[in-house]
Amino acid sequence: QVQLVESGGGLVQAGGSLRLSCAASGRTFSRYAMGWFRQAPGKEREFVAAIIVAAIRSTYYADSVKGRFTISRDNAKNTVYLQMNSLKPEDTAVYYCAAAAKTPSWPSHSYEYDFWGQGTQVTVSS
Image 1 (tube, rainbow, N blue to C red):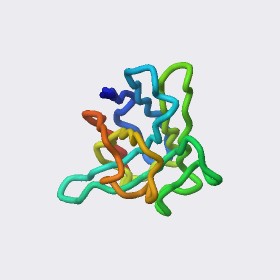
Image 2: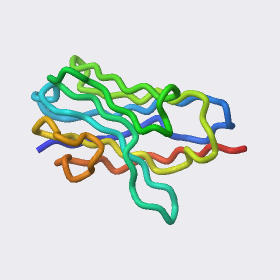
Image 3: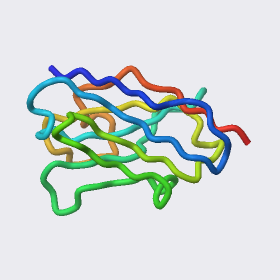
Image 4: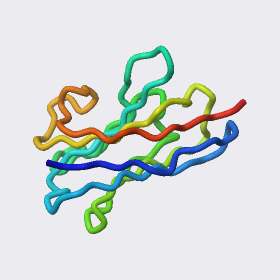
């Protein structure tokens, strides 16, 4: 069992930056693939970014955030980060961290992930 706790959300003006953190419990964090998803009011949850443990390609991004967001992990701290730059009002959502025990075949699909955090709100004002 893995528990995930997100932090770092808040209110920011368009063009600003935020860094989200997701702290994970457990001693096997380094073995998990980690992902970030988001859900805006009235919309379905959507993929944002993923970082894979052992793969030729280690990071994945949604087209809408590519070049603006960066996912990274610090296995010594059991933490995954999402650096968000050049934020836009359409980035406003609750952001969720997720962990997959097995390397996902489709990192952008939420069903690949076994554990989820409670979410952190990101609001970007225009």
